[in-house]
Length: 346
Image (tube, rainbow, N blue to C red; front, side):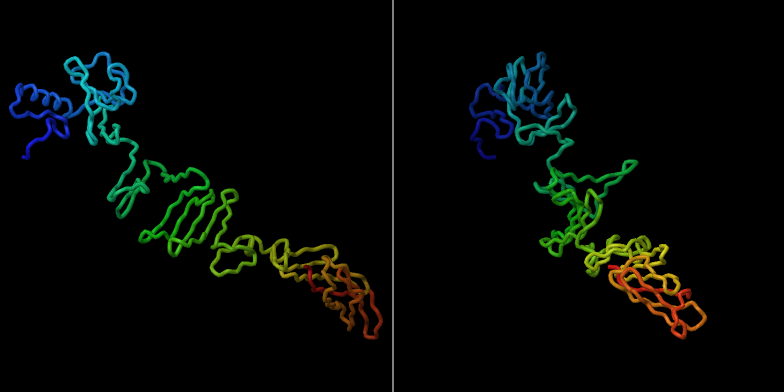
């Protein structure tokens, strides 16, 4: 053992017996006294600023930041009641103690006492080391979060709408998929081939609940392969029949629209085609049940058994007058005529 160059120990500040020292028992007893206080350290309280009125022999208190009375000027130190007086000494980093009033084990860390089993920990690592960016770190084949008899929620909260609260999926520490609230309150799903360039595949509007993004049609005329079709831009049993409409030659309504009036029946197609039909008598004007954009193509069929010649006269976008002639070229105004008109509605 090398020679001792100091009169007190480095860690517990115990006095050494020096060569040719008289009264060695005094030094020895002082060391024992100090050991009796700090070995198996028990604190009555922590962060106490006022000395107790009736302390017990050997009682030790961890003094708070603003002590008063006999503890003035001893903030942050330990105060031990011994031989009718207060003995003050410092606790070193890493010391552990049992606190009697709170029934918990504490450790001296960063100039204060903190619970070893505290509910709030600065960091926690399971199978791996945590760090400042990842104060909770878990390494293992799986992580289980289960119920306690009912449901279970995993909550990810962010400070403000412009921050991010998300789940990031990585491969080799490179991000390839992320879902959550990224920069606003809309739920989004993003993917990346390299962790740098990201594509927002889906985005759910928090107010309407509607989806947008690279995986969804951007407009009614968007026919990009692989994209999801919007209900209002596609056709099915729910919207195949209804009111047809066009905007810039793009259908914005149903595929087929059919109706009847006193002037006949009509059918409109989403491509702008319109068909009207009715039964009329020769030489009587037929007002189309729906007007055309321009004079349509009219087809007339006689319902008479005798040979007839038919002509469409006074044709316009809204009316036509069918005329029926017999073989001699004489008009027959009472003849029945089946009328069909095909043209454009929009």
